[in-house]
Every structure is written in C-alpha cells, then in structure tokens.
Length: 278
Image (cartoon, rainbow, N blue to C red; front, side, top):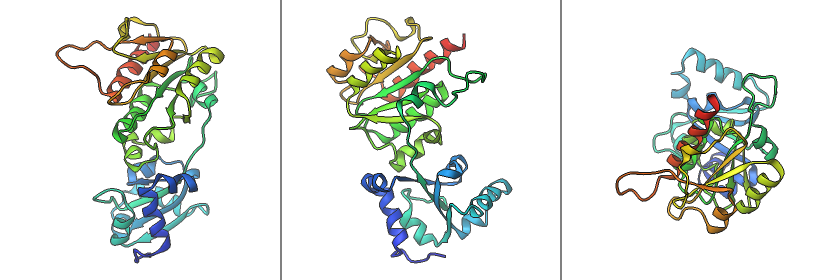
C-alpha cells in the first residue's frame, strides 16, 4: 500500500490532475470513480489506484471489473491510503479509485466514418455528422458537447488549438465516458479544416450565428454535415463564420440575446438526428 503523499508516483498523478503540459508530455489523463472505470477500455489503462474502503464496498459486478484489471499484466494496480487518494484526486470528495489512462490518437478519417465503419452493420453511419468547436473555454460545456454529441450520433468532434484541454479532469467527468468513444482532433486553423471538409469530402458546414437567415429546422441535414459552434462569450471569429457554407439561426423568444454553446450544439445535432431517423 502507498501511504506517503511524498511518493514520487503520487506527486506525478497530482501533477496530471493539475497540469495539461504534464498530461500532454506523457500522453495520459486521469479518470475518477467506478463509473468512469467501467467505461474505460482495458487496453487504455496504465495505472489504477484504490483505497481499502472502496475495495471493501464493491458490488459483485464491479469486483469482477477490479479483478480483471488486477490480473492484467499491462496495468499497474496499487492500494493507497485515504490521504494519498485526496492528494491525487481532482475532486473535493474522492470516490476511492483513480486511474491513469493512455490518450488515444484519432485522425480526420476516423471522424468522417464514425465509430461504425462496417457498411453492413445496421448501426453504420450513412453520412458524417461533425461538431466543429472554436475556442470553447468552459470545461463543463466541452464535456457536455461530447456527451450530447454521442447521444445525437455525431461521428466526431474537431476543435481549435486554443480550446480548453479535453483531458482536463472536469471535461473528462462531464463527458460521462463519451471521451472514450467519440473521435476528436485538434486543428490549428478552423477555417482551413472547414474548407478541406467541403472541398475534399463534400461536408456542408453551418455556422450557428445570429445573422443566420434560415432557422435551424428549415434545413436538410441528411447529407454530410458539420455544425460550427463558437466561443461562449464572443461567438465565432469572422474568418471561421465566413468559411462556413451557410449561417443557421436558432430563433429565441423573450429578451435572450444568445444561446449557451453546449445547448446550441445539442439543439442542432439532435435536429439532424431527428431528420436522419425519418
């Protein structure tokens, strides 16, 4: 059992919780709690740490998961004291288990075909449905976009390089496991990727914009589609908005001037999902 908060491994994990640079350099991120551990692919797990109290209160199913992890030679498993867990965890009240997970690398092709690439599968993706995000800064918003995006059937998410870190522990928690299943990439230039998607892959892009002439539910999204969502406070840059095929408007009543970024993404992607079910 690790009982010292001065242990070098404990300090490293505490660093992963706080510093994007440390996560990026080592190609890892952290997950906390049994729910996220259930979601994590075993081949992405590198290290798992758990308290004695956590291990003594597992359900039969969760105990089986822990035993499977413990028997995997590719995963390091250690029991730790409550003080050590508090030192490593990002949350105020740790759930008793934390894991170091290897970051997975995706590319644009993964986003274009989605997670189901078998054309014979009844779940195969007929056309790409992509979220393009520019300068989203709120971790909760970003995590929610992954979660709702998965629910709406997005094939992937493209993000600008100045975004909040997708591996921030708050983002990871907010995804509720979608981070393991929704392909995503960062790009240096959003206007350039929008143009590439249109010119090379036939993806029609729609910028969520207050100057849109058409309401979001007046457009056909059966074909290859991308929705572009901008920064929470400033919206899309002019260059990115101009690169889109068209603007799309989410009409609002009352005195509300703008829509929350994550809410806008949910409205647009679920409208596309509704159309594609018909």
